[in-house]
Image (cartoon, rainbow over all chains, first blue to last red; front, side):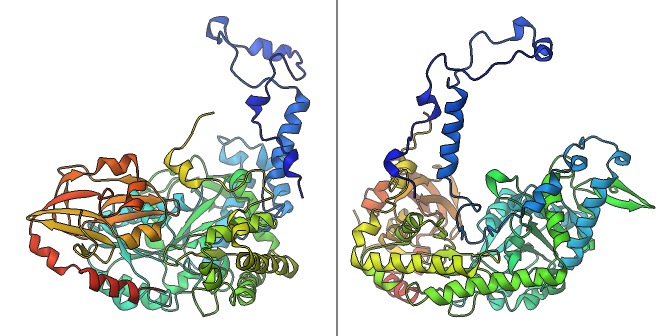
Length: 482
Length: 129
């Protein structure tokens, strides 16, 4: 445990002491490459002045305060914060991949092109779909790409469709993408069991419906058991079905979405395929789709011609580029390494273990934190603070802050919106039973503390470098400058 | 200031107070409580045409952002600039200082389809999980 009083919260600019420097070594090459004197700035940039030693201490200290998947259990629902195997990093660091110039001729990039081609083929097979682009930078960017494909598809057929149906159990990015793309979003309320109601859907499907966007399993961690009928109904109305694949970890290797009737879907390499999230990223996404949508995919894609792999710029019907070159290729190398390390059977095992882990946590906690659904969940469960804590005026936020004190990153809170005071937990398959037991013990301890001394829980966190932040004040009167 | 018992309610938790053809719209006491501390409001511009049951404003709390739906067809005649500057007004007095906008209703009779105080109370009970 870090001793709080010893933490120095000053920013680097506040630690600045004029005249302090690191080692400066004259580099004759750099001198030569310098800008002409008239192009150089007159004043020094206002950077903090620190010794190299101070800089090292400053950033090392900050890094030790960080919560990350490498340091803490990180049960963020719908984010699939799984372990990032170091083998992936070794593969991406291989000279041939890491040093390849993005403008290199296809002949000089055969290894990378073959990797992209094979990664695409394996994913198409795994998901039961026909074509793929690896260009999108992440999930929401994939959704954007998917809806561009839908637009191009309907334009090519001379159809004008302006509505996107999104159930309220979908990811928030789905309606956001629809509205950003100029579609009208039609929101559908879920049934009490958390599933999409087929009859309600049928009432809203029509000649204006372009796409039905569904998150499968949905944000309640529940599988849409009627997915095949749902897809059929959408197709009968002439609409396309888009699957948000952020929760693919629950299905991978067990279910081929293409066989369920999905027309296109995205996947997140930084979720299901174990590449790092956020600061360790960047992210990586893909759109996998049916043949009918393939002509509109972003270019270039990779095709095999004879024994060679070549960039394919399509027949002019492409929506264009959504990202430079082939996307975040380094991320794709990592995802490929992960795919090679697992057989299809092992992928099924990943899905099953992620489901077992989520149900294990749910089963051990639902007496104190009732789960929204009484059914078994998929790879994530949605819990609530329960009557004992509610009676003391305690909320989900208090439970989340209490977890920080016990060495866990907080789960996703207040989402999905359809569950009052939601706590959404996704353990992933990479956590051991011991870690899950520790987490369950922490949650039970928080409950006990909340009942015996509610104020202590309201005041948490106690061991973090900063105490409970005033989120309301920060949002109402944000102070955005130092 | 209208009383909670005097206004009409929508299923999406807006309240509406009709005076002739002009209707004042705000967020119900229940909704402000559920959302928690409201930190940002985006209101429609005066003169904008609003369509019944279509999103026309956004209210954001520390938990999330929520669409506000127009209870009637009509045109925006006034907006409450005070809540844009101080969104806490909605939490403090959703029926008074926290009103959101006024519309000139195309057909005030449309308000007949909305719930009164008692019906809204029943609706909340039915939908409590």
